[in-house]
Image 1 (cartoon, helix red, strand yellow):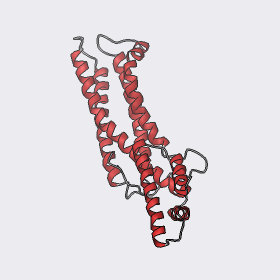
Image 2 (cartoon, helix red, strand yellow):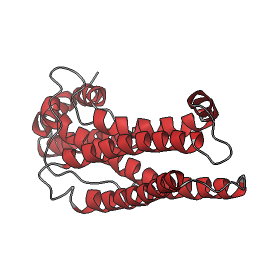
Image 3 (cartoon, one colour):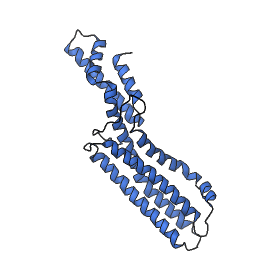
Image 4 (cartoon, one colour):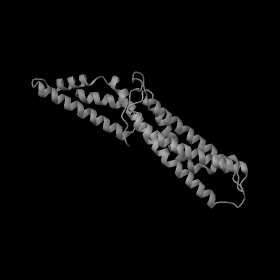
Length: 233
């Protein structure tokens, strides 16, 4: 195994995050190291290919020092995708639930408490959706300037988890207290089973943001707090 192959394999082992972006990063590093090795040989024709690769790797820097920088970029990419999904999904959820409620009305006038909870849920979804849209802008504009892009990623992750939990709890109460068709807690839980995959996906996105901002093994280093570029997808 060549010095470049060994270096790239170690870097790949240390990084975790969106697969496509990670694969692109690994390819960019490999190509950059090969170009650097070619430059060494062009400047010193007597240098062997193995020595040229060793010099290129040494000049690029140790993997433990550079991996946190790459990991931060992967975490920011994950946060961007998470914010995008929530900004789009929450208005759709509100629209679908509203249409279902209107189409399945029992003709019984809902009580004041039920209406207050329904309005509060709608308001929460609107505010959350706008907040995630703002997070998209913040990740693009501030990640290159902020002292800690990791803080932005964690904020998106925590917001995603809180949003999912709030949606699940409000959904249970609205189902249990539906006018003319209220059911028990057990019935609401069973009836909500079809929605679990969607909630599970949204919850996973939030957890992913938090997991990618912490070291995965001893010696891997802490996530960088320096500005990191923000991919558009």
